[in-house]
Image 1: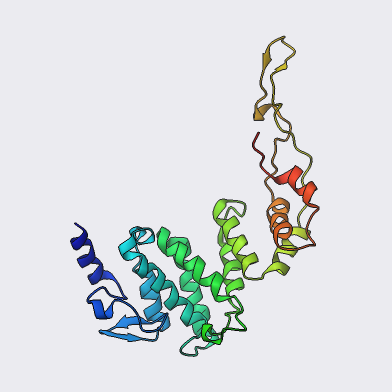
Image 2 (image 1 turned 180 degrees about the horizontal axis):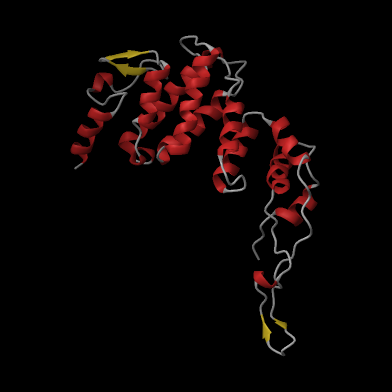
Length: 245
């Protein structure tokens, strides 16, 4: 079974598994095209990411494919081997955002990693190329594309905005939102009700059950974590943080 899987991956993988002498790129980020290792282009790097399957995220024999695809995509955005126009880079970033919205788990994981790491500065490592400044705008667009801005996917996108330096945008979200009202947690012991029965409270019985879920809490969390100019941490925790008892 393992040999069959390796054979299929050799057919499908853009980086190839078709020979011991060609199973590792000579330089990080290169892709195997027409039997030769070449510097990635936006189309070849995109193909590498699009060929990733869910199984590749954890399977040891295919983990290298997951890593190489990400390296190739980062090499393009960071212009490690070739220079590209801003329009080309932005179009490639848009393709990665499309995979985040529509791709499988491994493609989503890889696209997030590529875009966040493409924005990092490496002043002491010129071989890493140059930071891609468009990553933050790509993630802002992703965040705005979600109908439920407070859902898990949108929250992950806003975290990526923070990781790529978009604190002006996050600060604007926070300052344009309203602080939520005080909320209540159910009593941690049974209480006596007017009918004389002792029982535990339910969330439905509370006027405003904790935690609040709102833009003030969402944006404020990132300012608390990454900056010194967000809401008071104790106040944010009382109003917004889920607590386990």
